[in-house]
Length: 222
Image (cartoon, rainbow, N blue to C red; front, side, top):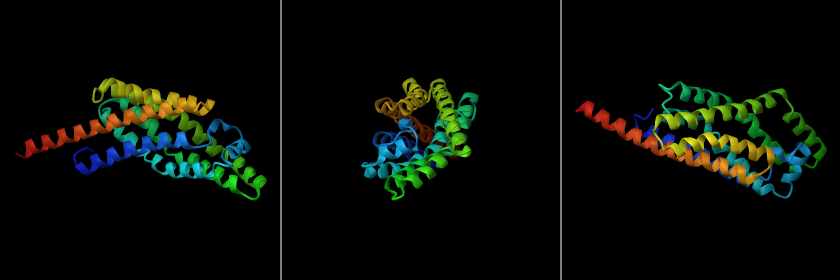
């Protein structure tokens, strides 16, 4: 994966962009999952439409979290470590349903501007209670929790990054869930800040691994 500069550059980009976007999106969005039912979520957005619109745009780079997990797994030694491989599988596969969850942001934003508020709320409520959407939410929360805790532990064991970086990745989903569930924004921000810091350390490790691989190839060629 790190045999070329281009792949390393892509890895660094997705690691930084996805984690920073998550941090900014959580800090800026006026609507959290803990806001309550569809009506409460829409009321939280009314009067804050520009901030919600920015949060929706930040959802786009958040999708880069899916490939970012693969790079974290590489740095954690997923090719030889069952712990890291299990973390990748848990976090990657459950993140694939992110589109269903991010779609809620768009629906809430549109409902806040709808002339037929009652009809918009009915549609939003039906979407959020749909079995597929609920399943994707549950899998995303549980898979993200299990995946990042395992990846953090694997990073600490691999020694490719500092212990604090692995601990930060492992702790991030716990604080993220608490912040979302309770509405304590500082707690959620702390969680996403830890993830961004851990991902930055993984990006630096990815560069080092790429340079080492390039140097090894040069020795073989010589």
